[in-house]
Length: 471
Image (tube, rainbow, N blue to C red):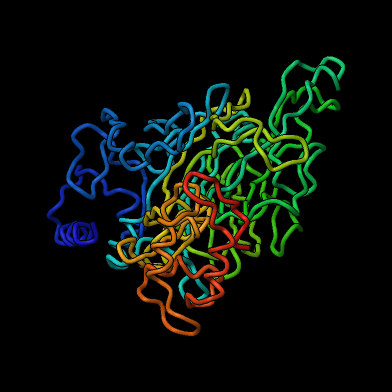
């Protein structure tokens, strides 16, 4: 795309392009060197040659967009997808629309692995921002009209694999039980925020995530019934929200060093993150009302690692048991939107700067299986990460219960045969790398101490061994 953009500019300089030629895309003009950029302006039937945008009035084509912004839920029931839109665009002719009310909410994802490999080299499959190489994420979320943005649940998120910002929730009581004249509706209240309502577990016991996220999030509203103002009968949030890797914040003036109140407005809400080693600068520019409103602040990064995915929309959350970070149901479900949430539009999404981060490595599981994964994904899946760029072909994955070498739940002569072949003696090197699993006390050799532990676990054929016997 860079070569095509430069060539197009050269043609303009010598007068080769005619006045009525299609315009170049916003991305090719503003961010030709971006790691990832999407202005949604080439998703039409029979698009013109790159880097030109489709003409106004062209027929949209959702299929190529859905090849970029793929379905964003893993295992959840069907949710809404982003689609090409011809209204409310920031740069014509198109934007991406994201359903937000009544029906299932939207979640879309872009894998950054190939984009990082193209930008930084084939050994790089993720990206990170540092003080020397800041990483920038910019996008526009269009709030439409009628204050719909305050009811929306839609944000952009940079994450490492599946380690996404949490949206697990406790439901509010029926509004009719706490408000005279209230409805029978209940609304989710996301728990991983400061001073969460009764029934939510303590924030001090919440998990950390490999994620940074920013956007509109009505389900942070702790009082969705609004008994004091029944003209607002459901969840709403008038401010930009930010997830730092540990908790959600509703950004307001004075919360962090900076200025401005981060109010989300009708139409264009331009968001920019500048990601450094330990901090993020969050900027919001709103063009409605006029003159532009500008807010900014500096937030410490709880998550300070790399990113391999870009998400848009909202993650599927689960209803939590009272006082516990534990889901009532194991089945992931898409969340439904708030009435009045409308269909926010995304446009001019760009990710640029930063630096490439190293490749994934072997991830071992207790059944001795191995897959190659990023470190954060390996941890989420309950595996043991073997190190960056370590292949499964050379990794030694041990059973959770090491004396049971053949994984048949007993410790018998078959297991002893493996152990015996690894026995060398104190402070002597392992017979070979596969003997790592016979080192029952983890001191780097297989000696008398390990043998005593093994015999303490010996149960016999088809007799279940005590899993704690080697402790």
